Image (cartoon, rainbow, N blue to C red; front, side):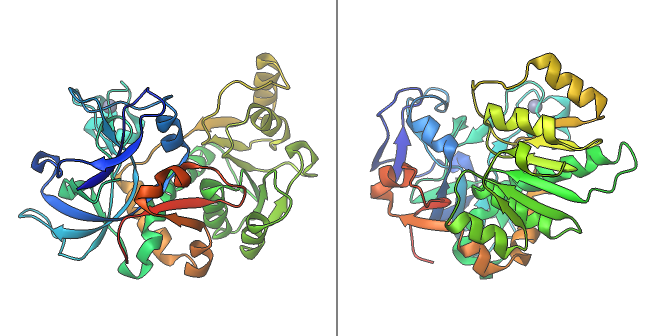
Amino acid sequence: MKAITVEPKKPGTARYEDFPEPDVHAGSVLVEAVAVGVCGTDVEIVEGKYGWAPPGKTRLVLGHESLGRVIDPGPNSSLKKGDLVVGIVRRPDPVPCANCAVGEWDMCRNGQYTERGIKEIHGFMSERWRIEPEYAMKVDPSLGILGVLLEPMTVITKALEQVFVVGQRAFWEPKTALVTGAGPIGLLAALRLSARDIEVHVLDRVETGLKPELVRALGATYHSGSVLDLGFSPDVIVECTGVGSVIADSIRQIGAGGIICLTGVGAGGIASLTVADNAAAVVLKNNVVVGSVNANKRHWYRAGQNLARADRKWLSRLITRREKPENFKEALERRPDDIKVVIQFSEI
Ligand SMILES: [Zn+2]
C-alpha cells in the first residue's frame, strides 16, 4: 500500500511511498483510509522540529486527524464492515501513571504516553490502517467527510470542560467569552460556546473573508484588532493562537474571576508585560490560566455527539481544501484562505 511517511527530526524527508500493510499487532480492526486532516503539528514534524518514529524504526507514518471505513471489524468489536470510524490518537504510558491508569491519558503525568502519527506509533496517512477496537470511535454516518473534524472537536471539548470545571471554584455566571484565533480549533470553540447562553466573540488577524463570515453565521461577533481594544472584559478566553503578545493581552483584558484556557502551542515572542506583572494581574482578579492538551475517551464520546448535532452546512465550510495523497506537500502549505485542509485517500 501507499503511505505518507517522514523520518522525524530530519527536514525534507517526507514522501508518499510504498509501505508494508499495517501490522496485525496494531489492532484487530482493519480500516480503509477516507481522509486525514492536516494541522500545525504535521507541518512541524515534516519540518523536522517534532515527532518520533516507532522504536527500532527510522520512518513514521504521518497523520493523526483520521477518518476511515471499516474493512474488517475483527473478532472482538461491535463495529461492522462499512462503519465510519476515527482513531483515538494517544495511548496511555506503559508504567502507567495514575492518570493513565484511570483512563485519563490526556493528563499523563510522566510524559511516556505515545501518539499515533506523532510519537512512536504510526499515524493514519496510509491507504489502510489498523486499530484496537477500544480506540476506534464510530461516527454518525450522515456526517460523511465531516467526521474528519472529530479529532479537533475533541481538543475543544476537553478545553471547554476544563473551563467550566474550573469555574465551579466560586459562584460563576459567565456572560461573555472571547476566542482568540479563528482557525479550526478557534471556530469549533466558538461553535460550542455559541450553544450556551453566553455572548461569543472571536478575534483573528484577518479583516475579511470566510473566517469573519463563519463567526457571524454563529451569531457571534468578529474582531480583528487587539484584545486590548475589545471594549469589554471577557469572563472566558479560549486562547488558540499561541502568540505571546495575544496571551499577555488576554491576561490584561480578562474580567475579574475570569478563566483563560490556553490551547495554542507557540514559542518565544515579545512579552508586553513581565512575568510578575502578569502574575499580579492574575492574583488581583482571581483569574485562572489553565492549559489544555489532547483528550480522553469521555471527550471523544461527547465530541462525537457535538459534531453530529452541529449544523452540517456550517461545518462543511471549515474544510476549505481537499488534496490527493500524492499532493501532500500542497496540503501542508498554509494558504491565506485555508481553515482545515484534508488529504483524501478514498471517496465517500
Ligand atoms: Zn501517563
